[in-house]
Image (cartoon, rainbow, N blue to C red; front, side, top):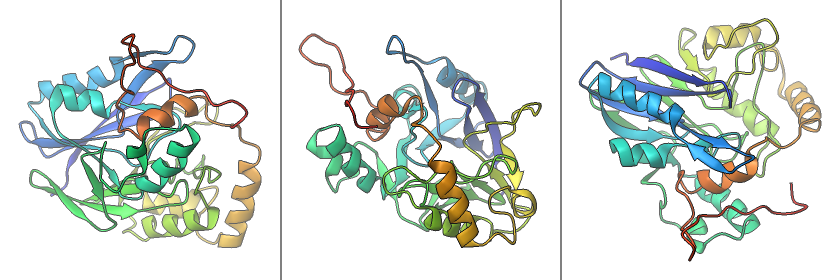
Length: 287
């Protein structure tokens, strides 16, 4: 059964949130939701997530899953907010534990960040695991390389691929975060592009070249024919050389410090301190 997809682009972070469902009145999943954040003031808001809530309510949908493709470094997850408003279980790939361990040490966070439990997520998916969104069956594909924990969510004829691939004229994700690896990403992309050619691929971001409107949907066939980094015929050594050289020119994402601290907590804020205020940490001379 082919699901319906509703996309919610956020121009501030160039992120796209997706609602996946069968029909009005059915269960749904929300993928890679965005919490608005103003970096100069440290204020969060929910305008982007509230657009998703209105759609869910207008179509009488029931949220079963709040899915994250990985711990994003360029926007804050709204999963915790949406769970409070709509219900559903927050899930991510099981390799998030390694990301939690690295950044838990970097930010000197609570020991729970390196535990073996799924907390603060409700569920950690294994590669190949299946799950239900009502009558729809989803399957998890582990696609490391950008980070060790990236996953794609596959439904009938669809794949939500996070940051692994962008539109063909933009290319592929960076690989210079802790645990990232260009050759591993090449292998992961090969798994995605081994899906049937007509498979619809949905990206988490688009950074369009000048003159092109924002896009977030492509196909396996289009990627194999035209992706500027990994189209058919580009070898792993060529890709690794290109990706390594390009990554060396990139600075940290603008929101990496707040995003990572919150996203490895499934979007939940740190516990308020004695004055009732939650705080994030700013490591000096680290990034």
